[in-house]
Length: 394
Image (cartoon, rainbow, N blue to C red; front, side, top):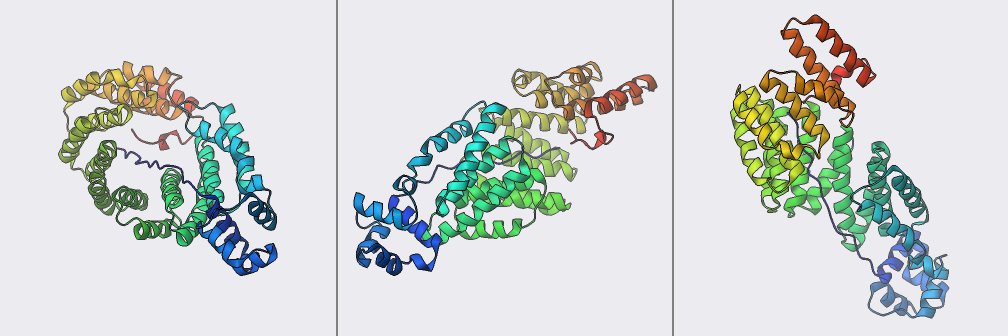
């Protein structure tokens, strides 16, 4: 039984020039206080205070003096010099399809953007860009480090300006890399921070308890993980986001399955399937989980019915199709479906190895030693490692 990720999307923060000046001044320390900086600029302290507070427009001449005083060009202060690279990276991040070449070019741009960043918001935003590109390249450790660095700036920006966008994005992405890496050092600080800042935000609190759920599952505390899953579901129900609610129900069903409450797991998944009808991937994931639960309950007829009813969705998601076809072999007591998966190059090595493992079990029950050995060797060849049995279970 498997859980499914709850993911977060937020809009880009919009920052005024006044605020950018204020951020860079604060980043530079006490020698750039209003009093000290205005004196060096030969500008009235009150004039600079009003500019930084956004209560007075800044003239071109004043902007040039301020930029020079900060050691920047006007273009750098206004971020005009990096606009093209930001747009190029964002195009890749929002693309429906991304090639390796596109991602590597975006990675170079993102690193350049981080290198020239000034002020907490620009630094944090560009670290998030870099981390997301690294994530798409499956550089999960590097992405996690980028998101952690972004969180430090997000905390500063939130404390100084009450701006929560960076905090929202960095914590959401960190939860993703914490769970995908199954490494939870310093996660408690992040969760406590989120509970303090977002305690009235149902979506964010749902993510908090989702992370607690994964953390406790990782530690082997299934009872507490199950409680967290139910609490996450309660929070997500308040968002009226049907896909998030459906995903949270899948996670609840996972822990009901883990605690051998198979009938309750099936009931929750049946409800989730109805909610997730408009969302193809999440729907197919729920169908996969429901089919597995039906097989555990010994209801092969219902399992076959569900597999055949939703098979039209599976072609777009090869790995899910592979896992469902492996279960079809069990339901039909026919090895041909898992055998096809073991031969399908469009399916990941992990799922093909899993097909071989299940075929070994199938033929072992038939006392067919030659077929068992054939799929043992085939699984070893596919996985290219002796521990292929450690692949994630179906």
